[in-house]
Length: 554
Image (cartoon, rainbow, N blue to C red; front, side, top):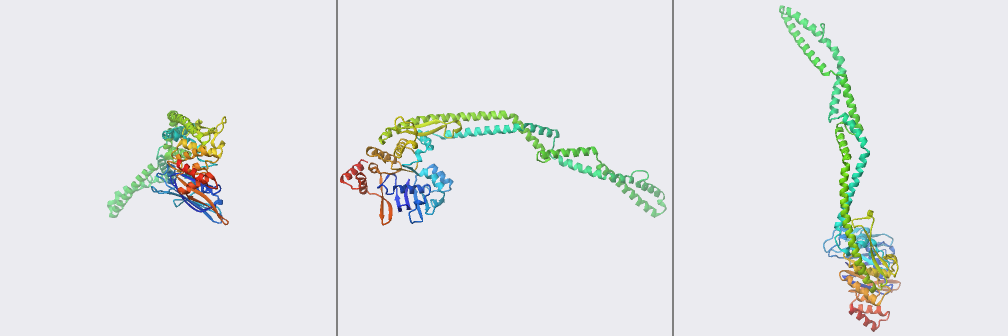
């Protein structure tokens, strides 16, 4: 609830600090005393548009601070604070401050942390609800009517929300699978052609490297073939160098015994023959190793070309081609088995849709039944509020399936008819300011809503009525305030007498300076103010006696 409001340099208010409490607080004063300034100031601190015309003349800035206290923070408020990374200790007040400059621009703080005005607007519905002559929010806004009816109807909406999410998830999975299959089907012929090419090629991992090495060896043999052929005369033929060495060795062997030097020469020649023989063997081995089949070389080069061409086509390496083949087979299998997969998803989506529809239909029936009870409850409140010719109707209409949501399949709106025979229409379109405020009061009483704003304000809800109607308004305001905090700006003594606390708004002038002030009244001052409201400028003893009777009855 709102516990304190501090205003500095707002229009006619120079400095004002007001403390508030639970229950019904009434604000009274002469017309033009400045009651609207209080509401403008409060609107400013909860995020309303900054108008530098609110800054008091001659001042360079204005400021408004509002303090709220909660036994437990409302869920939406806690979520907004968490998202803004603002922490609050249990029992700590929530303090909003807004500063407005005369030359334009404003700044905002929440518990001394700079925040955006957007955050103030976001949390405002949990803090203050204002109903006045030109109400365009709260109960008038059809967007909130379903929530109010559901609170009135009771029951758990969590299952409906869960069912809706499950249905949408199942439908999204089905839509995605259908899209995948459609895309894959478009590529099926191409995939089959590519897979046929790769299957015919039958690539293997590591094959390119082995083929490249084999080709390199064959290319070396091709280059050395002529040199090896030229060397063959060393060890082949009767007139080869090796044959001549062996013949010389045999001839020398016959005469080696004739002289020691001939023996040494023979030994050296034998070593030469052995070395030449080893050379012959190595050259033969090399020739065999480097020997190549031109047809095999051509086959290897063709294979390499085909592997690398396919790798370029599929934007991968030759070693990745076997994996590409496996992926193509998987994709084609998915296309072939896609109908079965889609059938399973269709069954799941249909089951989820039926479950959601069942819960939504039950919620629809619950809302229809609650709407009848609410219509009856509001109707019983209209006559005492001088709205006996009016009718109230809660419209619960099924929406097209495309507009179903986690909240169900219904659109809910509060409608009224202010004259016999007139058509029903939205609240804001056909109700005058005074009628609208009384309709809202009747709704508030009928709904006895929980989880609304911490502080509810009615601005001149009793305008244009008096006597029994004003008394009925006061009684209902008091009833609504019994479990929370309600502030009423009023001209009615019957309403003022119902207040738990009474604040007097007055305006004074000194020279060219005019100031608005607000002061809480004592019991004696309160009786005098109610007497003034009853009799006018001159307070009579009869008015004081009537004020006493109103206060005692209240």
